[in-house]
Amino acid sequence: MGRIKAKSLLKLLALMADEIILGVFIFLILPQMGVEIPIGAALLVLAVILAKDFLIAPFLLGGGADRKPKTGPEGLIGRTALVVEDLSPEGLVKLDGELWRAECISGMAKRGERVKVADVRGTKLLVEC
Image (cartoon, rainbow, N blue to C red):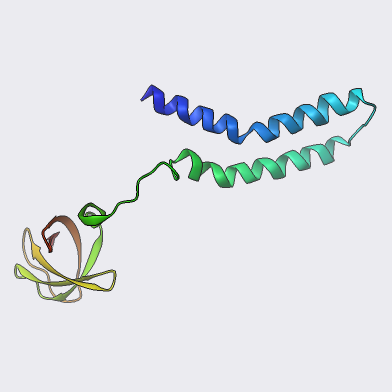
């Protein structure tokens, strides 16, 4: 777990590198060269660049590029399906525009109800009713 936090910290520092470099340039280097930038303008530029980071950071730090997409049966678990043929206990549900054979693992579900996919066995969805 410590490695994950360290990796996220390194990503955050890399993401903020442009603000750090720009801040050093505006507040330390330019004044030594005799170029004065109004503090309001400098802070506005840094705020705009920082806002960009806040839009990108959740994707980057949340593992967007590193996260493996859920495909196959494990990608269906936890999803919600619409019952199109009564499940008593077996029938049909619609998920992402596709019809699936389904079985209620407890109880029954009527047409029009929504059920949650608990597991997948072959081409049959096991759903919670």
